[in-house]
Length: 249
Image 1 (cartoon, rainbow, N blue to C red):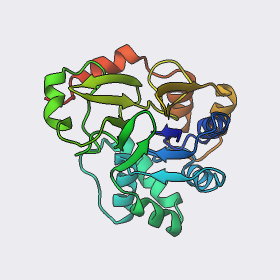
Image 2 (spheres, helix red, strand yellow; image 1 turned 90 degrees about the horizontal axis):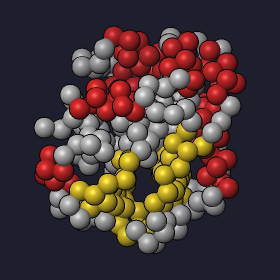
Image 3 (cartoon, rainbow, N blue to C red; image 1 turned 180 degrees about the horizontal axis):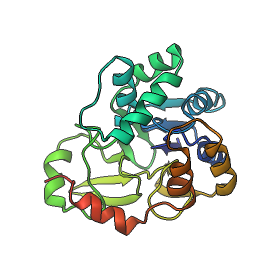
């Protein structure tokens, strides 16, 4: 079995469409969507795109962004989000259809898949115990061992920080899928192909055209998303420095 892991789409439909074409070319047998399909500029279209894949089974887990949208739909304001993020969460919540809300609510926090060559693979959004905990390829192993010891898996796949890595935590292999829709580092759409080993994949797509499509939406931060998340993402070095202040202690 070959499994495509696609994380942190954030409503970037052009990036998602390009990745799904690449996934088909790679002849994946299963797609695992690792959370944070939302929020983003084309939320309804991104969910519909994933529902319409058809030729490849798709399984989902929930990310903190998806959860924040569900909380907004339930009338709960998430206190720890800055106001610009709350604004986009409110906007996304207003776009969704009731059946899409029910779909998001059905997604579990983790999934397990047996993959030939890798063994038992655990998929989570950030860590197995939290959808918001932060760690990177530079986080010291001693901080991570208490979180990842005793999981009864050989590989854990995560996302959340939007930067790919492949590292060891004790005997466990820990892989970050990167971000399809909001990468940090070089522009493009990032994902994983799993089985029989791990491939860190990057899919190029028409960034200028994608930016045009995003700017044409009514998303509150469409201009910023097109410029900062599609055309010229923040650098990995900048984000590693920022995340070092917020990572697991």
